[in-house]
Amino acid sequence: MGKFLEHLPIDEVTRQMLLGVIEKKQKWERLKKNVLSLQVVTFGGFAIFFIYVLFALIFPSGTWKEFIDGFFGKTVHLYILLLLFSAYWAIVYYKRKCDKAEAEFHSLRCEIIQKSADLWKEEQQWKERHKLFEIMKKEYDINLYYENS
Image (cartoon, rainbow, N blue to C red; front, side, top):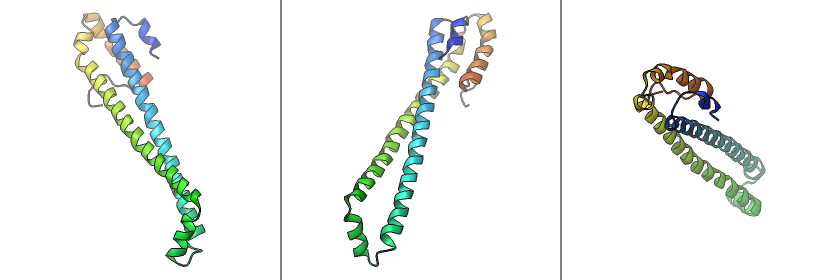
């Protein structure tokens, strides 16, 4: 992670801020993938369970009483519901973590943009910073040109 930073003429503070923004971006991307995976699996689980209940319990039973007796007659149905709702709450939990990671990433990215005049003090560094920004955009999809991107 950030091996190209070792060869660039930047000070240690700038290097650490850039490594931090790369790390926060990767954490945010990882959490985003986890949330999406959980959503797909949970939605699939709910859909399969609904189809099972529909065809195995609702259609064959003639009355609500028969359906309820059939549903609660097997404890596995309750365990499946418990599992599915636990997965739903895991989605909610990881979505909050994902949102927090995204906010931290954007906060640090904006801080780098706002402090760029202080981070690249020398005129030569200021002129060369666009190369670093291009690498960050190309390698990590991190835009350090504008705050609103």
